[in-house]
Length: 159
Image (spheres, rainbow, N blue to C red):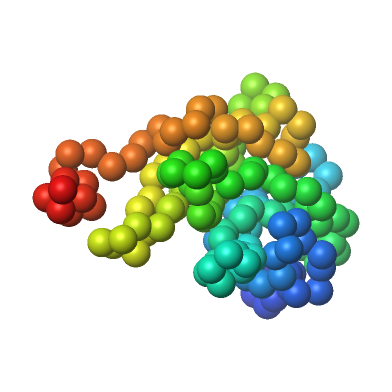
């Protein structure tokens, strides 16, 4: 394998992204298909309720030359979690894996806290439409804080 430096291949500010996102294309993760590459990334929108960022997942489809854009996600790839869920305020990043005709996505969801700025956990979502949209495997994380996690101790000792 030989790497070729390409520079910036996608500018989210030049495209209409779902959820009112217009900035950031962080933590790209590629899903290589037969005739194109889908690159998922984390992007952000400002929450009108408090002016803080919410992290969303979007994607860009590119030809395998990674120069020609053939599409950008027009709908939510995976909605944020409900009030109090581990991914209420954002999903960042996402790791995608094709498996038996489905696409599995391991996500890092985060939510805001008081004593520490955020808490994170790992979730699982599955796509039945080739990776255009995903649905959570469950409402909670597949791997989250444990009794040996410092954030848990800080929360437990403050009660």
